[in-house]
Length: 409
Image (cartoon, rainbow, N blue to C red):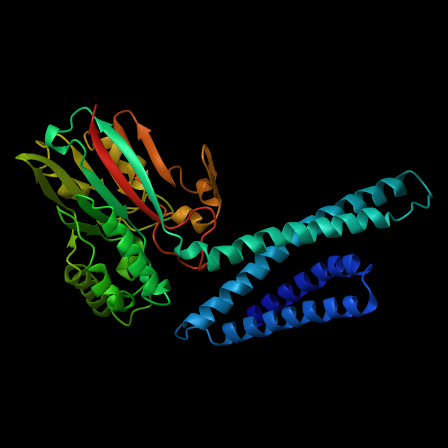
């Protein structure tokens, strides 16, 4: 109860602080418009407080689409208000320093600069409106705005028969975040339109439990490729973020999830490898279970086991969910793994992604977090994911379908 009261008090104090900027800007409005502005602001704030109180009191209840959407809107409002608070605080800090300086210089009567204060309030509200607009757009448009990224990689050791071979990667579907099957049907249609030679899925098919993906298995079964569809598990697939009643219950959930992969016609690689053959020539496809090198993510993957028996193949492609595996083990101990395909980061579902420059807060956690990386002759590609988790949207880093074409050279 104490934690609940503290949380509500903090939110209320933020609302009161932000209202100072609203009141300053609205001071120049006509009386009716000013009153309407105040009523709308506090109506939204009281709704936020009430909804937050209800959410905290009903924690553990099964989520539903409406509840998740409301939670996302409240999250967006909170983030936007924090931006406003930051600018207001900087303005107050400057005024505090000025007041302290004037006090030290002796008795004076400095005038309050109302125009400057009004400008800073306007600036603070404008800056708060930017993330609000972007994050709302990310929910309405960005969440299902599937992007096809095309990459060409050259390998001097590529067998001639594989020149022009096309691999399609998807990852991080997080089926528990979908509200209906329609977006996924759209994604599958785009995937099949690429007519790839092989399709790979690099983990996190669910948020927490196997039942989340069950309604979508028939849709996923429609994904086709000449050499098949292969998959691995991600950190969310193990059910480690659920308080299971027993280890047996957790294991049953994992077995069910593995069965969903098979029902979809996907070849789930559990520290194993497969051989891809074309016109009598072969390359190896390796798949490991989750192996995280950061933030205490579990290490279920055994790369040595997946690698064993692949030494003779000229090109090796590794599916490993967490990109930290690349620096953590792959490029230090397995120099002949030519390409590693990962996901996991989502590009944090928020950032700036323009030609020649990309930025996201996730880059301060992961060295390799989106796109193509190279060390010597080894490549890593990090796909930012097909679905979403937590925030039900995407800004900058839109849902991705990656097509990689192999060339000799």
